[in-house]
Image 1 (cartoon, rainbow, N blue to C red):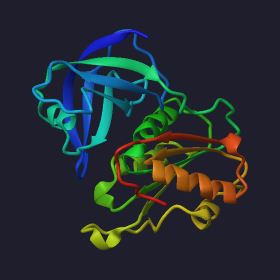
Image 2 (cartoon, rainbow, N blue to C red; image 1 turned 45 degrees about the vertical axis):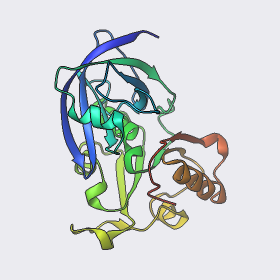
Image 3 (tube, rainbow, N blue to C red; image 1 turned 120 degrees about the vertical axis):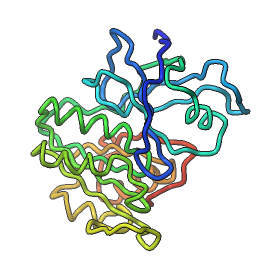
Length: 245
């Protein structure tokens, strides 16, 4: 796998304490929506015991002319450097990796159960499916504490109008701490919420992404609902607080 040297070309806030970073896309670089890569800082001004390399899901879709990652901005040396480094700064990019990608059989529904920053690979998949006009039935259950914490929420809502095969079910678990109105679901993703929106829980392929505690909890819910383990694919995001259980 080649290792590329690419430059930071943009950054923006996409939710409270969450930022997206855009990098130039290397010539000839191809990947599938849902894959990830490793970023290595080059001679950073500070470092710590965790080192200068981190893995990130690619949040931009394959058709985009840039690469984007998004992350919660924890107070670590890596995140501080990433937040403050000037545009044009070069980093090392080792990618693509991973198999958290949409299945091929177009008649089998895809159901994504995700929380917090676990939305990043799902964001890439949802955008790619809409633009490529894929016929797969896709449902995303997206859990956050509050609307303020939900990266890409409005963009995903808009995809429902663009893709007739797509459904977003966003849910908030701690609205008592929010300053925004919310008319959607509340509470954790559970069997009752799944059966409210899915006519048959045993048919889809499920993709679960988020903190390890959430991934384990969602697997437990799916098993209790009669879902075969062969129909569950997972991607764990380490170092973040769980947003669903």
